[in-house]
Image (cartoon, rainbow over all chains, first blue to last red; front, side, top):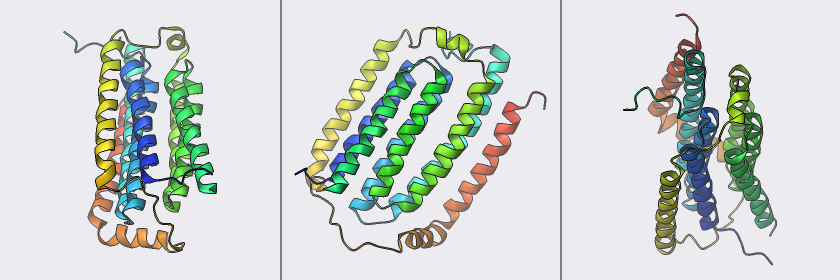
Length: 103
Length: 169
């Protein structure tokens, strides 16, 4: 018999997803994969919000998750637009080769 | 019992997809594993009785954002990037900060477990068939102003992304 699922399970899963996303953002060189890792992190936050929405039996967590998704969509659209402009000007998507502001 | 099995299946899908997204070399493969991960998270939403968010996750993330990502991957030439080194030279600093964040999470999860009663299963209760209606009521009454602000944000994002991607303004 398997143990029943608690809110702690969801929180641990959400923390693991967020850490994997952080690894992607900090360690990968490809800017497209970095943006995908940002999506992973926002999804981990949504798992957390939904878990607490169920835990506290309130609907507010789901509403915040809707707003998070909304911001994620806006971020993806603008970010990918910036990426295309960047590739047109610098001919690279490797983020450590884009070092104009580096001293 | 069945819920436990489904939780582990969806959690494994989400975690495996996430790990493959971060580790694979080809960006298209990364995008496809990200789809798997997002589908796993959508299944978790369904298990947590967030049916509306389940639908939004499928339609918006898997249908919308991933198509956007794949378009950009086709538009931006990634063949040269796939042959290069995939990880930063400053990977030690990155790994240290990830381990630090993980320790902070572990500390707060163990501390908060008792006071928030996280380790007890959530009571099942009667199946609420009006969950989406409750969500809509709250969204269009209490959260009406944030809702309108979000629509404004999306409008700005649409215009901004077109301006960014355009060759000559």
